[in-house]
Image (cartoon, rainbow, N blue to C red; front, side, top):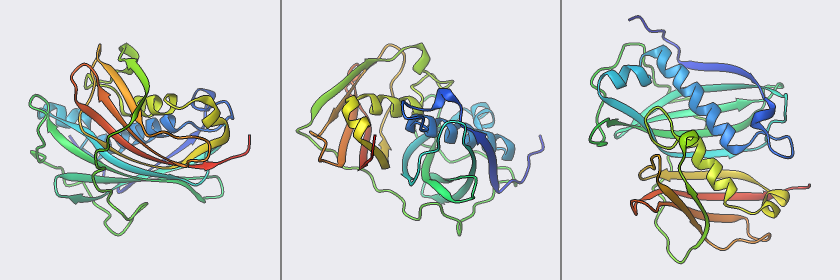
Length: 254
């Protein structure tokens, strides 16, 4: 099969009603959904996508990421997303993202780390083969830093619980990444969302949840004067930690 040599994937998008919140702003979980979809589209075109590695008994999983949001797009805004493979870091493949508004100003930056896992053992593996169309742009960075593993913390309070249902599951038969962002947002009371918005997030995945599992979210106490939160998601069914998150908020007018 012939693949294309596309170093930077670009996609123009118009923000639909289904992707915005009560303010008419693009939701954080929708941002992750867009990044995931376009990363997949780019990967398929250059020969390192879902279908190629599934045939090799391997699957891509998001392991960590950092996102910085300068401005949330509004309903019906047209934005341009760019994404590219930045480099290999140990076993991780680093993929960066950049969202531009109609004036070509950057409004959202993100960097993500992905691992190839054996589909059965779930252990990290190197690619069995790579087409010649894979190019890394090490001198082009949306975010320079590579996030370190978020340390575990205790003395947290439970803020959210949910059972995993059909609509939460992706083709790998585990909970979709954007769904975890939805769970994180839903773990905060409405008064927080009315007065604040997330300006940056760092996340680190440790495991996953499947259909029928119950997840719990624990966090440090936060109130309207505290602009930093630490959260972790636990798989109540298995006892495994799924995700650790650090959020930084900024105050906003209603």
